[in-house]
View 1 (cartoon, one colour):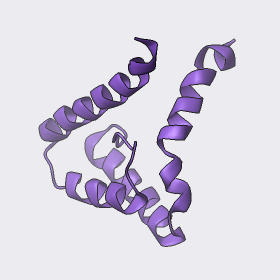
View 2 (spheres, rainbow, N blue to C red):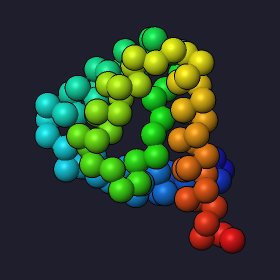
View 3 (cartoon, helix red, strand yellow):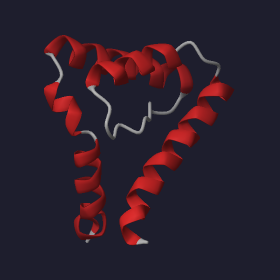
View 4 (tube, rainbow, N blue to C red):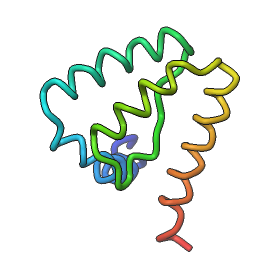
Length: 93
């Protein structure tokens, strides 16, 4: 039942993040390490609207955002979530 309910969402997410498939192994390693650091620092996962972004741009954004305060990062994460939500809603409207 959950697979049926969230299957479309998983497909959308995979398409949005397809650029990561072109990343070098070093970039993927850095993203994994810094994602863990981000979670430990802020207490929530790193979120970015990945549509149209290459892996190096996402990595640069992650590095930059690690320098923010938790308050700054909550605001940015919410803004990124809004971008993702609007992209996903657009075909339905």
